[in-house]
Length: 379
Image 1 (cartoon, rainbow, N blue to C red):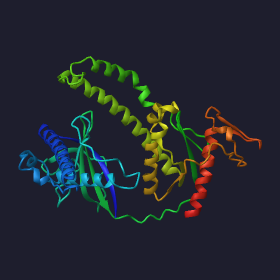
Image 2 (spheres, rainbow, N blue to C red):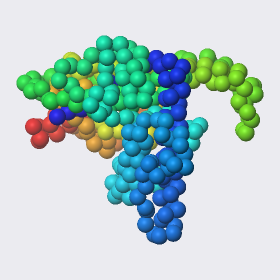
Image 3 (cartoon, rainbow, N blue to C red):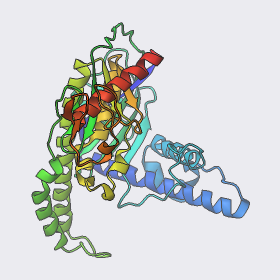
Image 4 (cartoon, rainbow, N blue to C red):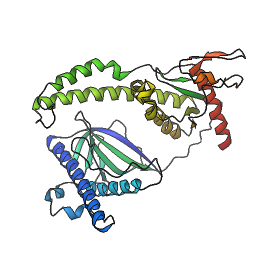
C-alpha cells in the first residue's frame, strides 16, 4: 500500500470560515493545555502524565463545538513531539516541545475519515466533519480504488484556505526498465539553480529580488499604521495592509514553486538516473558565505525533494553523492586533483591534460560519474 496527498483550494462560506477558525484555536488551546499539564506533572512526580483532550471539555465547553478527531490528532502530535525530543537521532530531535502562539503558529488541523465523513462530492465539494460540504477546486480527480484516510485543513497568511486529502492505494506494478546510460548530474549554482553535466544552466529567476521593491513599499506603508508597534491594538487598516503584504509573499512563493515543479517534471520525464550532491542548504544560506539570500531564493532544496518523489513515482533513480566528495577539485577527464579549486573565485578548471571547462560543469560531470558508480554497487 502507498499514500499520496493532493492539496485542493477551498472556498468556505462565512460560517464555515468561522468554524475553521474555532477549530484552529481549539487545537492550539488543547495542545498548550496538555503540554502544560505534562510539564507540571513531571515537576511534581518526576514522570510525564498521560493526558487526553476529553479531560478539558468540562472546563472549556467550547471544545465540544469542534471536530473531536481534530483534537485527537493534536494529542498524537504532542506524543510524537515528546518521542522526537528524547530521540537519539539528530534528524528527529527538534528539542523539547514548545507552546503554540496565536500569532506565529500555523493555522491548520487534521481530521480522519470514518465511514465517509471525509469525501469528495461531485468533483465540486469536499465534505468535512462538523463543517459539511465546502466548495473546492478539484483540479486532480483521484483514481478509482483510492481510499481517503485523512484531510488537513490549513489557512495561509494571505487568508486562502486549502484542504490536503491523503489517499491510500495499492501500488501498481511498474515494469519500466531503467536505462542507466540515460543519466545526468546536477551541480548547485547560486546564480542559476544548477548546472548539469551537459553544460546547461537552470533558471536564473530570483523571484524575491524581482518583487523586492513592491514588497518594501507595502511593508513601509504597513509600518506607519496603528498596530505596527509592540502591544499596540491592530487597526482595521493595519490588518488589511498586512494581508496585502502576505499576498505578495504568497505570490513570490507560488512563482518559485511553479518554476521548480516545471523543471523537476521535465528532468524526471527526460532522464532515468539523476545524480546530485547531498547538500545542507540551510547551512549554505549562512551569512558567512555571502550568498544566503540567493540560496534561499532559488529553492534548490525544494527541487531535490520534488525530484526524489517524481523519479520514485516513475520507478527511476535519484542518487545522492556525499557532500564532502571533491567534485570541484577533480579533473573530469584525467581525475587529477586540483586543490587550488577550493577557491570559489576560480570559475574555470584548467588541467595539464588539456581540458579547459567551467567549474560547475566539471563538478556536475564528476557528480554524475560518482553517482553511477554508487548505483552500480547497489543495483
